[in-house]
Image (cartoon, rainbow, N blue to C red; front, top):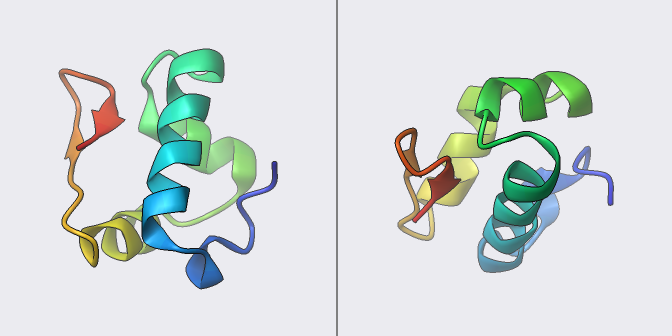
Length: 63
């Protein structure tokens, strides 16, 4: 799944995909995920914040 079009995705579906990728592929490291997909961390966090999700570094996921 590519995240290059994350800005047009439903934020709840996006959160699910991002959390799955963080868990399965990036060990909870958001910086690695955004680097791999070549997207801006601030933009991804802003998109997910529209649905009330924040990144919790200690959990390695958005909640």
